[in-house]
Amino acid sequence: MAVRVNQLSEYLGEQSDLPEKIKRLAAIIAARSMDCQFVWNAHAAAGRRAGLSDALVDAIRDRTQLPPMPADESAVVNYGLELTSTNKVSQETFDAARNQLGVQGLVEFTTTMGYFRLLAIDANACTIDLPDLLTEPVLPN
Image (tube, rainbow, N blue to C red; front, side, top):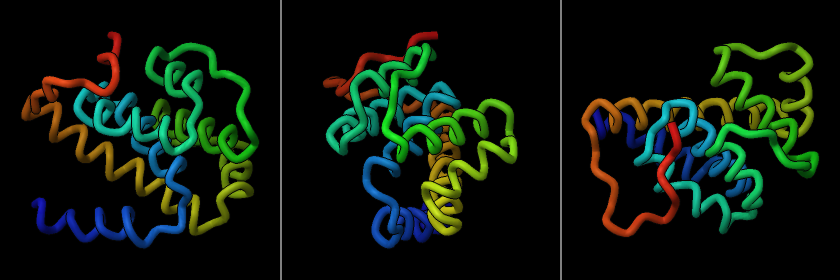
């Protein structure tokens, strides 16, 4: 299975035109939506380094009110959170995210979230241990 998924991983990681912070945003939204400690720990700190604010990462982690965000993040965050919480998005949310990312970018963002949800379900099912040196606090219940 890993060999088959690796092609998608390579594309999303190396060929996608999404900015790094948007890729990491997709990863942490997916990780939180699946309550996956392993994927969260692997990507939250990297998201901070890529330019996501501490306040945003912490709000996603804690499921609290989102902080003010730049336009390039706001529409995409709202899209990701709505999609992962309801499995669909309103036309208004879709249009706002498409306007920020373009059609290809939005498809890549959506697929990136799906990819990380795939990893998260496997990590959760197999109970992959966290490393001894955590980069982030564990996800609260």
